[in-house]
Image: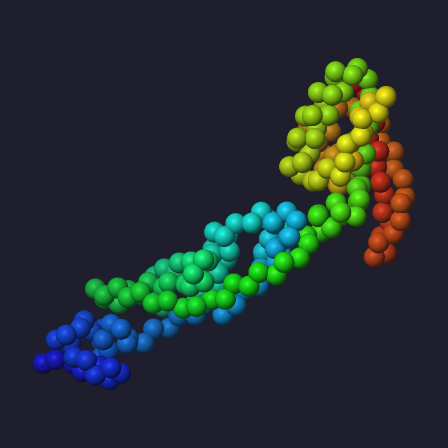
Length: 207
């Protein structure tokens, strides 16, 4: 005896059924975010996700949306380009795939790092002094390694050596320790921000 789908009127002789409904009209309970706003830096392309600025990565957006999905499904896959989430529902021997829309809205702005760079901000100065060849080699190595942890505001070549202006004094201090470089540190108060004193640190390195 065939079953009639209460929604579309088709019978079980023409289409597969799950319980009392055809596979196309079987009621499924799945939810995904209706909208996700992603901040994107117009200068470096980084995006703001889960409370931090990170390198732009569509897969991380997809994983974040998938983690927010709820319902009776075996798997959820987000297609960022199509702005769709595909759900796999398994009921007995039947496998159903349904899609739900999700609006991914890009908000173009400027990240704090690029804002500081454009404003000439820096927290530390590395002063490399000594043999010219050693100074040049050290400057190349320090700049390359430091760029992974913070930004380089500028580099100045002087008669007595090379000065490297960096965005984070903490990153410089950590790198000096990793490289085993002895430094003479001096701090200078340069202002206040939100009630906190702002210091600029100079790291003198003799090679």
